[in-house]
Image 1: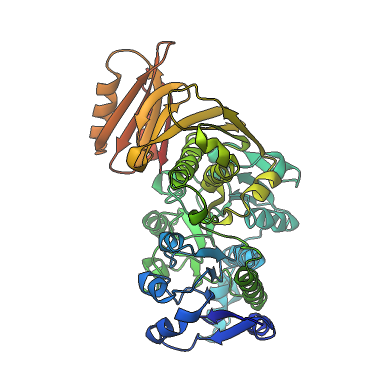
Image 2 (image 1 turned 45 degrees about the vertical axis):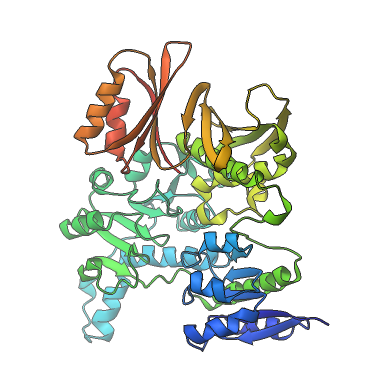
Length: 528
């Protein structure tokens, strides 16, 4: 019997190791205790590797792992995995995204209770200082308080349900889910972020992306109640740390419970100096049960991928590029980018994802549809979405799919059109690929354009009247935003569409200023 070599590069729970040890067709190699230079010699024979955060899957690692078919990142995050390098070598990268769900939910509740009752400080006074002063520790009750939950995914909705059991009033904000997903559970659903800012306690459970970084800053905190409590057990940087520090210091924020930081280890973070913060060292997955689930799932996934049976939670290109014509890959990439762009320009729950193709590329409609689904859903789902589970997650959210073919009618050799239908409206984007694999968006919601799907961009539909370009240019200049390109298309109904490529991320305040222009019909911001 030929055996598959699986190398465990970092420490995982013993139950996962036992699965590998007791599998007959697996040659199990334990390399968690050797240094990372010596690991490069060990990894050369591996069919599959299991890693955690201690091993960087970088150019050195991948160059040494000449036989590697798959890599399992035992956990949710995969910042230490060179995804592009894996894809170029045909290595499938996978993670274990749901094993720590309950651990993260319960840690959130622990921080919430600790902030309300200040347990860590009361504990230290008695145990370390040996002082018995009950009068120092009058806390507050969760009962009857209003909790705002930002993000209603795997973790957010479980936090909401547990808060309901404390008889809290719970409201959630998540524009990417149908409202019934919350209301069916007895949770209030809001489309107004202001309703969240009016809560007694706010907890955030979103992926970390351009839309959510600094989602809560000075402007948002100023609108909150005096004495609000903020919780973040999701990703560092969702709350602006400077704003968090300033408002904790002033007392505007009564307490904060923080498990994640922008820079980790966070041993010198200034938040640690404040007396009204409960902190933990990124312990979201740190329960014995969670670690066991992560290890056993990682081991089982490693065995399946070594045998070539399945690639659960694949994060990169799940097709063999050697078996498809070279012209297909840029169209697949373009399709995902167009869907990603459409989802950013209309931030609401998706109802349908449609892909239409003409030319030879229409033979690959199934793959195009999968990549469109990943692109459309990654705005809201973040780490949860991948090329294997995309359709399943979409169907779970009630999203439907449609694919169609067209005979040559546009004048392009090949053309792909992605249409995203949401609760608010419909976005349609078409693209093609020119010689030398030059990807281009050629149409957006009926307006003909020629734009590279790359970078930061403001998309503005406006009345076709004089002075718009100058006014927008001056407004951006006044806000220190540099324009790198300004593409304009004119419609038949006295409207125009501008795609304004910019060098810097644009603030919410600047976008709101553009929206107030008399000529503006709609304004959105996107990054590809």
